[in-house]
Amino acid sequence: MDESTLSYYSANAEAYDEETFHADMRHIYGMFLPLIPPGGRILDLGCGTGRDSAYFLSQGYSVEAIDGTPELCRIAAMNTGLDVRCMDFMDLDLQDAFDGVWACASLLHLRRAELPDALCRIHRALHGGGVLYCSFKYGTSCGERGGRYYTDLDEGSFRTLASASGFRPISISITGDVRSGHADERWLNAVSRAI
Image (spheres, one colour):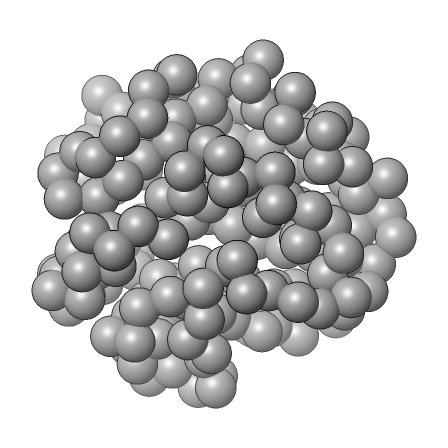
């Protein structure tokens, strides 16, 4: 992941927790969790401060959480009680380990050229037929904005990327941002099955 992005999250971890931890994600959870078996194993890839991991745990799922920023991992561990691992997404090297991978607003910080490798690593980490949720800012831009690097995707670019990496999109939706003060931002939300 881009060093400027990691530095941004290191410097703003507490503020990021305050801004995002209580965001209402129930609609998005409803796209993903019905496809995960009860008590199934979920990898929260780029868990931030642990909002989604905490919810999955409360619903009886087994959760492993990782993030690339030590400060976010520390806060996520406090928020969830999990042993949150600090690692780069590109170091993910697991096979047939999860029923679902949740990558909420995390893969978007990789460069476009890194995304195929990242998705192939996620594919290997999933059981056959496992499910991936990921979200990207909606559009076609790439570059640094506000101290973080972003790769934006639209429906076509996501479908091409998913197909090339062994995923079949189940649903793609465009939603507004659930955080206060960000209503004008649009997000691509995609749920895909490993094939």
